[in-house]
Length: 211
Length: 125
Image 1 (spheres, rainbow over the protein chains, first blue to last red):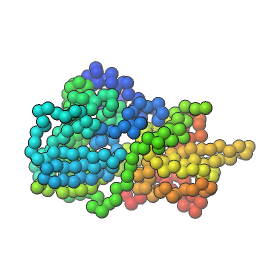
Image 2 (cartoon, rainbow over the protein chains, first blue to last red):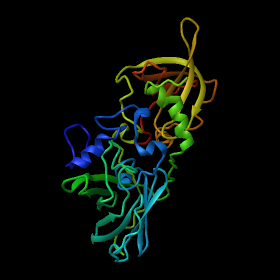
Image 3 (cartoon, rainbow over the protein chains, first blue to last red):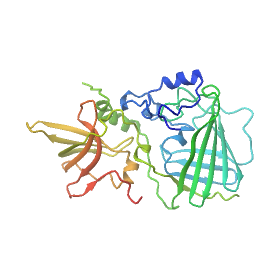
Image 4 (cartoon, rainbow over the protein chains, first blue to last red):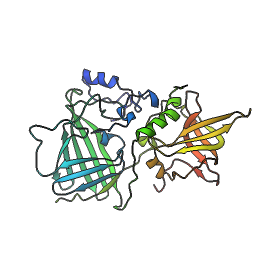
């Protein structure tokens, strides 16, 4: 969903308050680099579903009969999605940055993944525009293979604490098939690089001059 | 097992800002400067790479400019590398400056010592 001041998700008052406390680097309210309070400015993990909604770049997907594993290029993170027929455990493990995911094929070309047990405000944001998420967030991903070279991902979220109804955060995001010998370049958020970047570029670009 | 056997996919690149680390708030949108100078440092990193270069103004005063590009992985796909610059290289940088008045900005293109110009277009797309 674009952040243009027109398209807004259905915030609850708590959701709007959390959103308003975020100073994002993207969207119609974006601030200069060093004035943002985005958790990933310290190289904190993006968490999920932000991993889908921000910097979804080269993505490797592997499977065996028990699980599907997704490797994300951004910060070299991965997720495990159980496909062994299990449901969510009655007692979920402690909240995780990337949650607890269970997936199933609903037809020959559509894989649906549900995820719960996620961290929420203030440790993670939903997206780069500062939309918030709580620990009550539930996520449905639909991976639909349109043809042999194209897959589309749709992400629907539900979070009764921060949103009044479910909404589609990403609609049919296109992914194209790469050759299987493509060498994915690493892309890591290194705190020392981030510190140098802020000193050399972020601070002066934001009008902050340190003596 | 179902037909899902793909292993590697890439987000379809729609436009440059999609993969940038921050938005446009800091920049003087649309303004362009063309500055010739001497490279002092090329930092190949995340969340952005950045180039430092000395520019001498008409009075002879030297100002060290800092200009950013996208991140390293992204710049590889635009034909740049860690070895694109070395200290001492004479370059002409076209940049979009920030609004703060500091000598920083973001790269639009760079004319290299070998006469080649590097820009931000993706290679092979």
